[in-house]
Amino acid sequence: MVISVEISNLVIICVAFYPIEIIFNFISIAIISEFDNLVYSSMRNESMRKLIEDREILEKIFIKHHTTSSKCGLNELSDQVDEKGNFRPLRVMFNSRTCFNKFLFCVYKGYRAFFVSVYFYFFPFIAVIISILIPLYASS
Image 1 (tube, one colour):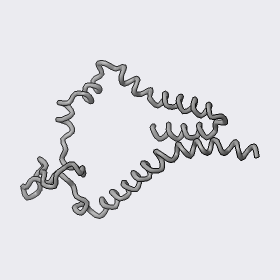
Image 2 (cartoon, helix red, strand yellow):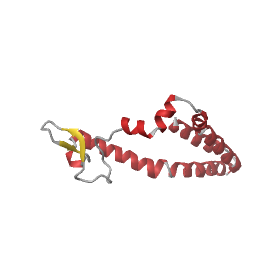
Image 3 (spheres, rainbow, N blue to C red):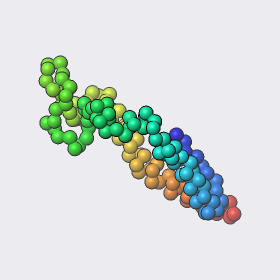
Image 4 (cartoon, helix red, strand yellow):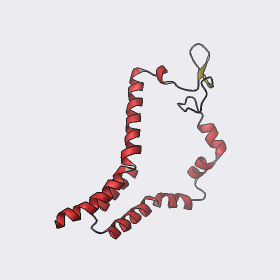
């Protein structure tokens, strides 16, 4: 849903003729995209909300068996036991992955780099530039 809202936001911004129209369209789409947060905050006694916010329940449900976090030490052990009866290491190192998993990890890092550098920062900027340049070229 976030991607579809972002794409519609870019399309609406690119079709606008006046800078004030770009700002109004951006604000209206931002309000629409935040609507789900408003609905969530209005629910007081929902069971799912209690599941999400209760720390004790979260700690019992989400137990870390493996992590790739650099904050995890190299010698930390998980509560999982391997085939030999030894505790498995908590941190997953790149060289301990399978070949296909290494490939998927590199694909993930590529997508992440594209999202952080191009999609998140450059697309809104280019949408504003295009919405300014199209009327200039059309009037020439």
